[in-house]
Image (cartoon, rainbow, N blue to C red; front, side, top):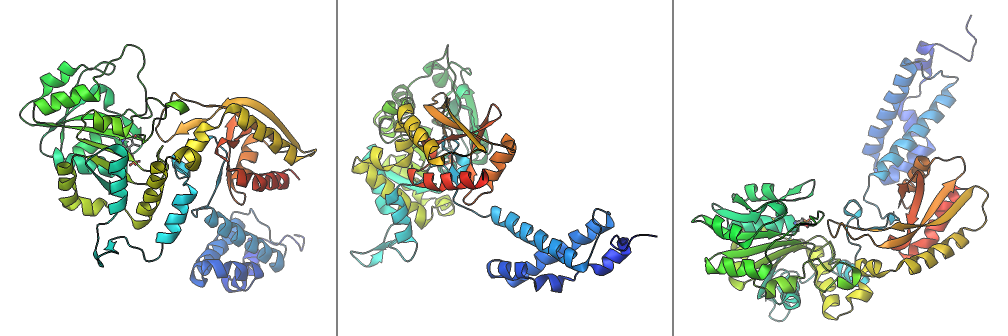
Length: 469
Ligand SMILES: *Cc1c(COP(=O)(O)O)cnc(C)c1O
């Protein structure tokens, strides 16, 4: 005879609470306000199916209806919590990767954040307040961009990939673009220079070798169907050693002597000289324009420090053609992107970028400054028998496909909590409120305060205390 508290599966099925019963529980009522009733019912059905499957698989021996219901409530809470984690959330970036593409690239300046809030209702996006007539979308951001880069004109689209696609489609489609073999790069999973060329209907004419390309290589390749010379910044990839490529001025001179355009995809690009941050080889957009590039594209949310946008600067006639093309309408940017960009460009024009743009402030932090903050941080964590911390030397990362060879020195905080492996601790931080994204190095969880806002430190102390309690 079986004992009374271990009924067989068919008994357990009879004990299983209904979806309606589950929906009447406190757990369900709490979730309903956030999820909506229909979605909650869907989740509850999923939970009931899971409970049934567990019984069928004999994973679960039902003791009573109440215990089954309690378990289903827990499953429902877990299902909702798991779904909440997929929402777009603010996170604390403790990885030390400054332009972290998976974490939203550049964090915005206060000025840009204010501008986004301001533009989130009705705003003068395409409205001229002086005349009361229709205005030009993003007109002011374009004027600022042209002014800051010395270009005749500027245009803004959704991202740099869109900018490259637009420029190639309008200027080179049906013809050929000449590019060095060393610049046929992949910037990250979904942006490969040869693919963008192909999509735009431009034939690729590769010249030179991976490490060395001469001006004469370009010259020999120019033929009747050549439309432009294309220069692409290798971004997250560097060829060092025995290398050579012609500069913008030489390429521009060659292009113009043959009646062609020179187009540079500068990738991240810089509006001010970043040499003081160790990023001297990031192309300065104003230098490219001054050296004769006819059109240059770059990203809004990399080193520039604004939100996602593709920035195009160059000759008035080229920009006019780009704006007129139907593709421009397809690729145009959103009002919030213009708001953030305009405010960020104002910061550059005020010449206060190094004090106001978070990306630049993080780049400027010295190892000593970070070490001091890390020391104070550990003090604030206080005495805790479960928690073991240490300061070690390490490197931060620029990220966003910029300057892969530059790794700013930093001081890392190692975190160990008794009873938790490094993977478990990293996971606990990741699902905390707000989520904290840390790195694991040599089997230890490490925090790099370079990318943690000073205002977030208190939160981080509280979270770590809660996990190690
Ligand atoms: C990053 C990058 C791009 C893509 O820019 P998005 O703004 O992400 O679309 C294109 N070209 C180069 C050279 C880049 O570095």
